[in-house]
Image (cartoon, rainbow, N blue to C red; front, top):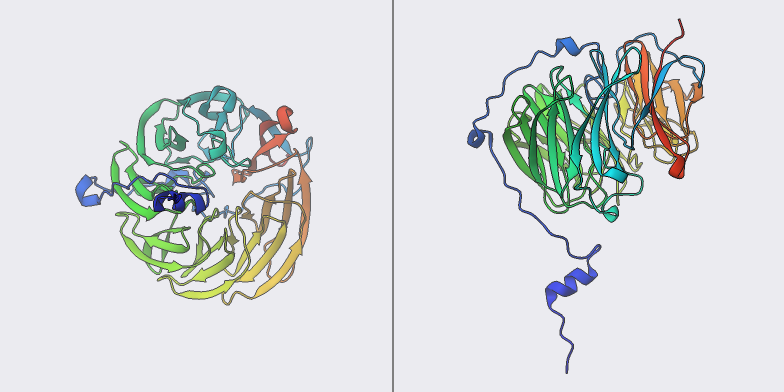
Length: 436
């Protein structure tokens, strides 16, 4: 008697990770939703750090007076405890510093606001109670609060993976929930990471996953879905980025073995270029008419594309978790394994490489012609944003690890830092500013 194995079962046995449930994405067009998109005046946020990677979403801070050296006692304005664990980077809006966190023992996903001047906790809001992914569905380095919030000055928008779906929640400046929306199912391989971004009166969410990935735009006032666009079945972790490139507003995101451009107002595809890898984490950056991104897994590539997606240059370097940053003429990065690099934007020539050591997850920020970037041992390197050579200004340490990226605004740097390890590890929010 023959042992017959149905083809579908055999496919499950040989496929990496076995069979995984896929949920068809219910696409929504702007015409179907009837949502009206209106311009928003965000000039009041000019002195703030209102979203992932700052005002323009590119990791560049306006020039201002901030320290280049500090330690636990010098140039530290204040510190305060952060409950739970998270990789949500701080944002700074008006008088508030706001971030997300997760208290795993209680299965709580929360948002906390601190006083910008004193560091005092002002409010704490529980977004979800229960519904956490199974332990095997979240990477050991990840958390249940990876996403950085975004704010238009009126609302604070946060995203979470909960109950196998992605939820988007809006809070007011006092921490009260204004609306919450389930935007779609999510098949978790390693957890959820992308941060929300703003475009006119929309908040835009990415949710690439093996069950059926998608992009979705929501009305920031009501949470109504304006559009939703399917993205395929690849698990990837990059946040989207909106920039005007080639005179056109483009919503740009890597992952799924391509770099793709969409109309941020409608979600309609503009172009896509095969490149990088199936899985990426870093956020696209742009300068002039150039688009730059790196990653990933299992393939490795750093690319520069034109405004219409044509490949200009590429490099077989992988910058997986950290994002790139550019001063317009040069592209700077620190790889996950601690190699600082500089490329020329024009032709991709490597201007210099420098081994820093250690491992990195945090993304770099440029301010005053200097790059600030933290490693997973709690060191913050400060070096010149120069194409000539690597010139280190300082190496500063406060805590024992740093996964989140810094916010720089108002002549201060805000860090989310880990202290201790194992069961004794705690997180703190630290404000670094010149003593005078």
